[in-house]
Image (tube, rainbow, N blue to C red; front, top):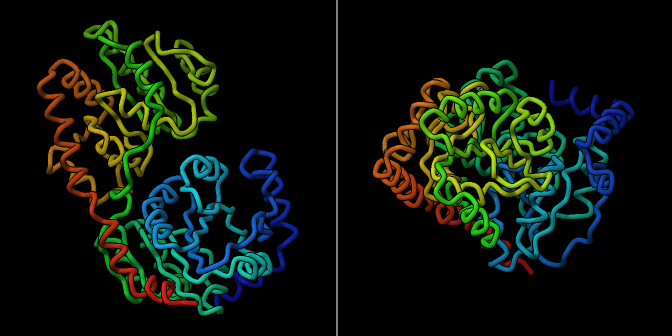
Length: 417
């Protein structure tokens, strides 16, 4: 009932959807040059041969799919990746392997979805996490294309929300031939909501190779900050920068030459952060880290600063809910800190804590204490960094397990003419 109503409404409200998209474009949330892709109008030709279409909503989902994309390309398959945000498209322009194609996912109107599928004609669809679009999933199954959920994610909170529309979510999950949860808990929740074959064989976010960086720039920055104590607040959200600045001020009594680096989750917030923290320097303006507070409001440089800073606090975990991926700094041997609000990583967090690969802080005062403790004790810092790296390397075998699980569908593509 709800699914049918959604389908009718998404068709009838075409003009309203266009107005909404134009407003998004005015706010910089759509790419004007590639806007036709959102209406299912392809900007590239479909390559010959078997095509695997992968979809990730935004940056995090797309990054988690990169190792899988590389394996698919190695098999000689053609790869199309879609996402829905300008930021993810910019990131994929830098990170997507040669041979893979990126397009914006079409808006979930039946006519635009059909136009997209008529052009790309995917032979297998791998859908990441929980970006469920009813019309897209329906049209894929109408064409009898195998559809597999990878990195499936349903938080306990989302589970309660979906219980209010059980038929709707069950219909969507019923489109999938296989649901691979990020964690055993995700697989259980997907099964509870109506997914058929639901399993957990590993988390692809833990198979992602270390974030890249410009080695020459890393050496230049290391020379500039040599001898200074430094730490990083990564992927921060609104309100967290001011909190980090207060921690920085409190640490100056003990570490007068301290450098605190902030990398906001959304780089475009740089001017906003500078207005809030007048003493900071913005990397986007060409400033160098020769002051106390340095805001790296640039795109794609987290790998650089994870390598530069021995202590990393992950944002969206003290003030906001959810957390940001702590695997990335651990993979590069940083001592990892995060707050108590890490609901996006219900299995990773206890695993890291049990292995001594991270420390959880409960308040800004606790963050101040733990950063000071690590910076003041080289032995403790070295131990924390080694624990994080060892844990991340032990957890990095998920890709092989996912590929093995996908092998029946991939072998069918290998055998296709």
